Length: 143
Image (cartoon, rainbow, N blue to C red; front, side, top):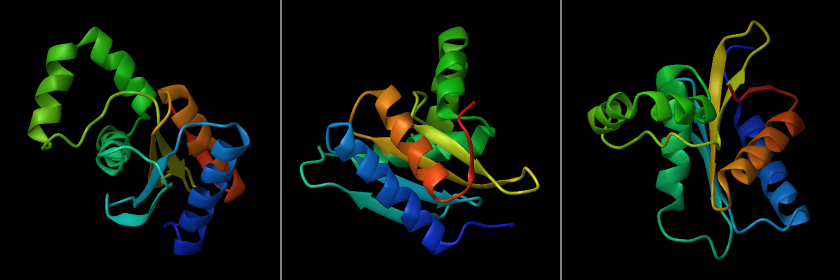
């Protein structure tokens, strides 16, 4: 498999939102970007606060740009805050270095997509992304 399908992206979103409701998370926004960083699918629950789409996209985009999950970017931001700030500026603000941005890998290990989730705690955002990716039968890489 070399790219994510629309059906898989929609499954990620639906399952991620179902997990959020089951666990009583705050309303979420979920984006799926393909390997090129192009929006494949997006949904926001009723009651999602302002700018969640941009935050979720920043988590996913940052993961794609660096080839690591946004949790790892957060750790790098602690160690090298000036570098992450400079890169965030260089990419027009499309990098949010906190958990919730998870890479999706194809059968051969290449990156086929990234999922970004925003709306609850960063750990819960990441949990929703992981649940969605698993439900789609794909391999999540949050690191």
